[in-house]
Image 1: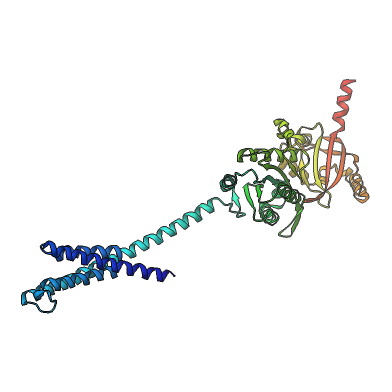
Image 2 (image 1 turned 180 degrees about the vertical axis):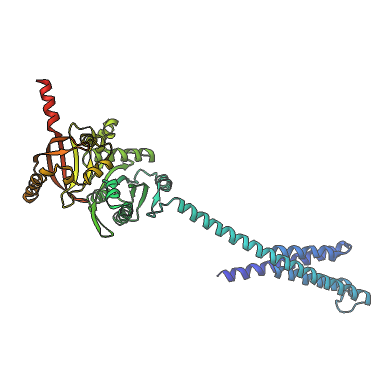
Length: 436
């Protein structure tokens, strides 16, 4: 089809060039213009440069015909005087030379133009590729915050009809720092990649997936009813994600807050804000679930959101630790109160002093009694509070009598753990005596 169009276009230009050259020749002859061939050569150059070689060649042929007509005896195009024959030969050869030169220059110009067009096309493709790459998260391939914001804004601006519905979800991985600390950052990256794969499977093509950074994600779901999209979000947040990273197996979950467009928010900024508030509600109520934004969410006091596990554990009136309920008895967390009780200035110093083990924390003569109590609790498999008294030796050699309130729990990612609250019985007794 393109070849037929190109042929028809070339034929039209050829006919046009012939008609215009012959018309110009006739006008030059009637008006008796001196040196008319020079004027006509300008037509040939213009047709060759503007419309191509064939229209130029047709124009040149018409000029040759006019030269033969003009210089022949009685305009019969056959017989010439010697002088006119020489003039015709010069005109014809000059015309051919000029035509070939113009055709050559046009060919080079066309090639240069085609090269520039191709170069411009490649530059546009590269710019598009670079722009797309700058909008993408390197680890997961989904949109980063910049690209996600632009894509969400475009989606909402293109769907301003009130019948358009969407659900915007803000989510993150529960206890992600713990995953990095215990299993390593490579395992954390794999967990993020697994989560994105599951998001793509769960939410499908009618979604915009965004990684804000770290373990924080956003998703805009559209193309369905609010009820159906909400069910997808709730189902996804209810999942348990299983990881196997270099032989280390663990499970993780997510927390998710979401808001509805346009019923709860009719612009991107408001939508983001309300989904974040809903996510805070999830954090305050135990994680591993999804909650929608409600008007009561806005009544949440900002100071409630600043409380962390660290601030709580370090400011409780008792010491606190978590350690593994296995043969290693590895201490994972120790509160500032416990470090002070043991005469240590940092957790590293505490680990060096105890060997990083609960067994190293207990006074040697009391280890057997304490371990029997622990073993009895593990065997009973009842998550009741275990209470046991024993002694510890502080880093500076002092002996303290400790009361231990422990509970055995199972963490999906870390396995069996002991959560232990401890208080110094001697310090408590001294306080009581002081107030008696």
